[in-house]
Length: 315
Image 1 (cartoon, rainbow, N blue to C red):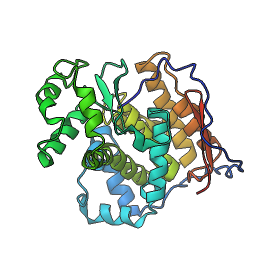
Image 2 (cartoon, rainbow, N blue to C red):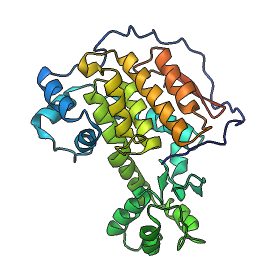
Image 3 (cartoon, rainbow, N blue to C red):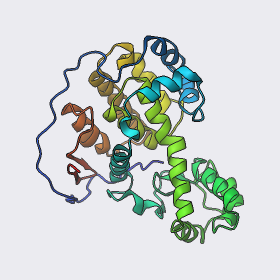
């Protein structure tokens, strides 16, 4: 995680692909616009996951756990962002903000220190040497592939976890990461870590809150940028504050109004943590889709991030 982009206010616009399209109809803002949940599930699971700590526990539970009611209701809802085509679109949208490209697979080998106090940022979702997620990937990968090119750096990765230090990593770690990123097994390890820590919990919790594909993406992108923390600027903390201000569709509120509140809270958190930050990944991307009433995240899509214009046509 999580590019601060505080210094990219003057990025040069780039046209990625072209298409002409009509905007989606505006959302009516009616209460309960998201996926329909059973009354029993609404009263139990939503209550259990309302606060930040409860939500983190609920959303990060291993697949298949959580009780028959939880599994049955979520399984009965439309696939949403976790359908293959929609998941591919979500990765492209995130990559436009994280790596300034729609080709998210090109970021497996990405690694640099972006000066945000979290050490090296690397891979498809911005795993960091200072935030435990990069360490966890290498540890898990090494269990299955003990002779990999990153294994020798595990002692150093453990030592720098929680800091921005490069001690024990320079000068060879960046080259070793890029080399290992060419190995299909390590690419799958990155995919698995992304899904387990960021994508699956975000989508699962968005479905619980009655949100459709756009809302599921809003949660996912916030999880990527802010991280899966329960504090004031962590994803779960942001959601708890949004629920305090605006009822989710599961609670009978308007999906559009709730997402508008969530994005307001998120932007405020971005600015508080990184004064002067470019918030275009919200302002001219997610907010644009929301203002257009495109709660289903239908293509074609057009958005801007850091001054660059991206377009995804109808498949």
